[in-house]
Length: 296
Image 1: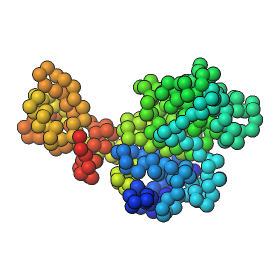
Image 2: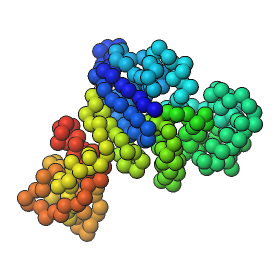
Image 3: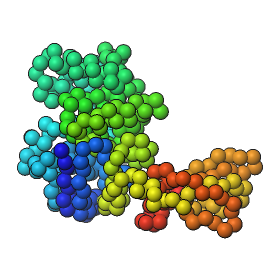
Image 4: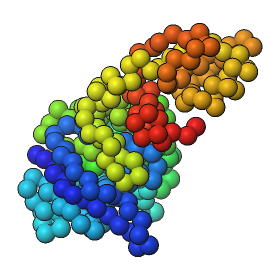
């Protein structure tokens, strides 16, 4: 299973270039697509699921051209968009049953078994009879995840999937994706939340202003930030100065000052100790030093 993207461009009316010459290969496992808001992530997702046509370029899914073989491609896909809507007059299980019928499940028994399984997997079985539009925000998101998985697709594309989820629900979602990653499945996870990538993905790409600026393993991006992440105790005055000159990753009140983590070259006038970077640190370092595109 493979997604091959070649020289992909998307230009909107008015001339805005949302995607610029994207070349990318996505293979089995969890693939993280990271970038700031407006980077072009959702545009790429909509092209991959055949809801939008590119201005130029080619997308092949297992050798099938998404523009010429759209029907075959859609049979392989499960999709959770960022803005997911529900039918007001369907219960949770009815909504999933409807999604299963759309996916081609004709057996009522098969649909019932799959609907119950998915409701249990996302922790919604106890509210299976509740109207879908009456669920809490986090529950709606989980139901959206369930409909993306209901047909057991070979390619799952999810756009900002953990928006609105509390920490427990986010962990549940990550575990669900991790279980799926052990099958012959491609999972494309688009997000601006760095923690979603670091916890689940073995491949990642970084988009910025429509361009592909990183395509490699998350660990390699983390390694590039070694020696550039620091922790220090600073006074109020020092903190104000640091904010002007460094990306500050975290701040914790400490007595009359702050305990901070920051990214960059070690300043000569501050006592700071080097700490091992995580993916969030690495992302900030990359945006600041490679792209000169960080503004806190």
